[in-house]
Amino acid sequence: MLKLYYAPGTCALASHIALEEAGADYSAVRLDFKANQQQSPDYLEVNPKGRVPALVTDKGILTETPAILAYIAQTFPKAKLAPTDDPFAFAEAQSINNYLCATVHVAHAHKGRGYRWASDESSFADMKRMVPKSMGAAMELIEKGMLKGPWVMGEQYTICDPYLYTISLWLEGDSVDLKTFPKVADHMKRMAERPAVKKVMGEQQAKAA
Image (cartoon, rainbow, N blue to C red; front, side, top):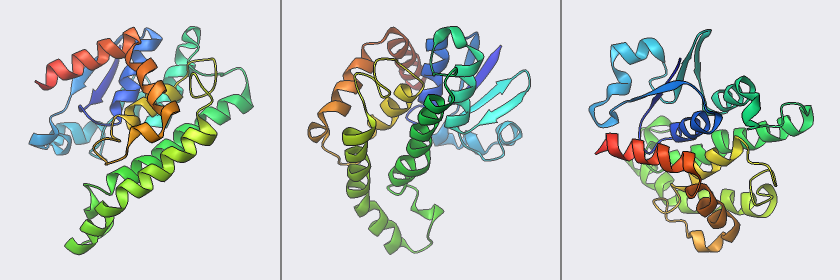
């Protein structure tokens, strides 16, 4: 059985949804970030980075959302969560997910985790002020050039969709007006209606309560 470590409100939501969509046999372990559980000795043995997600498999432990999503898609091919039979299309999916990981998520992190890049409090405030602009610019690029619709890659639902959905949930808190991105807003609505998403969101919210 696979084991996913996650925390509510984090990018681990994408992997959690993908596991549910794939019909995987898995368990989900919630970490309490408020109690700094991600830095506990027990968890650091699982993931020395002290972050989520982490996926425990029979071959070892995977971290980083794009890698976990690709693993899920390839491990459960019947779920058709990625065009694994088409090298170029699969690379396109990887390109999108890596953009979400390396650019969009990093832009979001400047709001509350400026200490990763600077030590001066004034620098933290400056980074925080930039978040609406940087996140807005990233979503504009996604809206106009990456989100084909109705799903990210077009007609086929893929591992890109739970990842975009997860990051889209952060936009309001980042002071980004979702009304200016109608395709992204429509995608969020479609995602919220999926049974797997409803189940995972319900479970995460219940455990967080």
